[in-house]
Length: 559
Image (tube, rainbow, N blue to C red; front, side, top):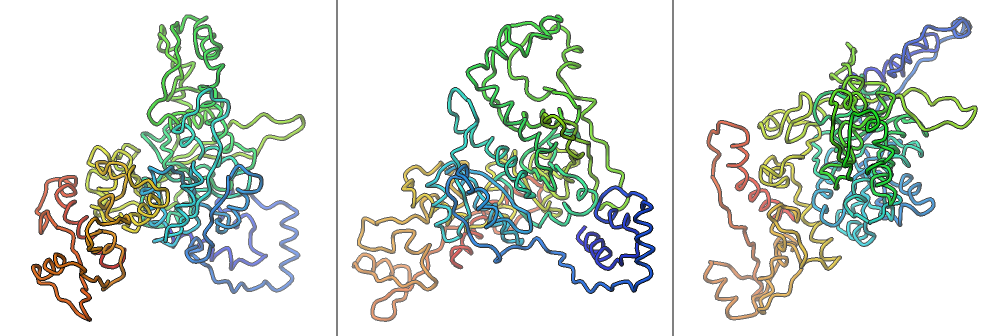
């Protein structure tokens, strides 16, 4: 894909003005149109003068921003001009990678940002729901760029931190589209093995606007919003409407007027109740698992169908009397299907559809330009559970030999924990543990570390890297005093007990009683990995030894 994209850029750069302008459009992924009489005349006039010779050097890795941007600590992104300031500091060539978190997501987000940097991508921005958390991320040695937000889903009768966390990304996608920024929105439980930009800019994806990963079959209403990319999306356009509709629907579920809309005798059910398709009782549903993903799936499906559909999330209960009529009224099965892109020049297979809906126009305004939605191929993004169409599932062991550019660990908790799986695959960066330590120390939350059962606290033991005050006089007994110490750190045994301990372990002292000591994590697990029948069995057997060896190597090299 990188080579094909570079070749297209080179061909465009070296074309003279006498060559067909519609061929340039084709190279850029736009529809080929025959030259008009005016353009033909212009070409004829240009032919009488010598054609310029291009001497261009094409940067095929234009997306590399590591070391070229300043870190950023923002104020409230809802304050006037603050998001614009964040874009000026953190975007690179109109590109930005966006993710979101709260305190509990520190480890995931830190590893995501570090994995992006490892492939050369530093144009990222973390949005947190807490000002203090943002400051702590920024103060860590790794300088995680962050802005916090006071935004909440509008008009909700009760505040829900989870609802705010899930929907703030849709809100900021709307604002970033308005600022003309191509934004890649990623979940925190993703690791990056290679840059996706070559694939996103090459054909066929390069001609599409809204790109997302699939949850199941190739259909507009099967979105997995762990990966969403909006490129060349028009301000006030069709892709922007999808994000606006997602927030609008969620807001309608939690307003004080929600019962009047979705409850008994509500306007939502009035047509189907009157037609004998449904009947009550109608009660608002509780907050559902992955609710924002379901709501956005319905928003994308609605735009593809050109009408409002509700296949993934019906917001209230109902007794269905006529199933076929119910499906015809609410669902989007047929109109939301995405045909395969017919592009012989394309490096990957994708599926796409036109977006038909947009915000209401003012009198005299023309409809926004056509925009399209497309699926990202599994070679670029695959998930651990592998339910997306043609994805390589992580649990199958396929990632060991054919890792995707971006691995989404959704569904990984059932296999142990997501961070444990990242370690087993060698995709966990132990600097993330140092970020966790710094953040929780800065926020004075060391006594509120999440249980290490789910590894939310990181890969290493929760308190290993945290500052502490040992009860004994020997400071070397405090884990952080050696784990975070420079190489060949010097410790002075100040008690007879400490000196005796050194002698018992065969330690050597040097330089006037100063002891140079390296403490090693206890290792367990298989010394060599035997043959296993499945990939998941391999990961389970190999996990402990590999993760602890990686931790040891990380600590001995100052992470």
